[in-house]
Image 1: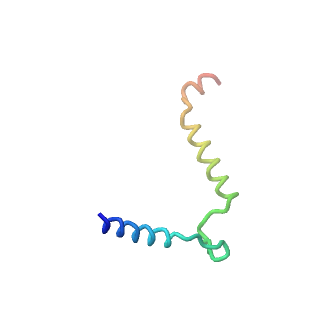
Image 2: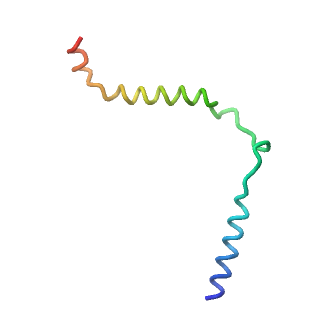
Image 3: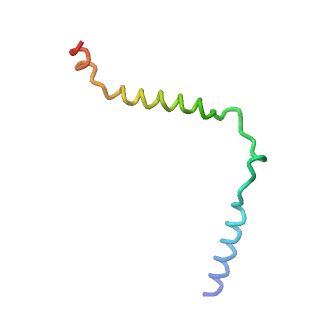
Length: 64
């Protein structure tokens, strides 16, 4: 019983000590990552395309 608790304690200490946050100055952002403005444009286009795919073209043409 005690050995299982000791093992669990050791594993949890190792797990939580390895997940320390890094400072933002040390992080290097790759060039392939989109900027916030680019991501907004891509998501806007994706949502518009998804919405347009639900339009029934025959009904739309009949109203014209």
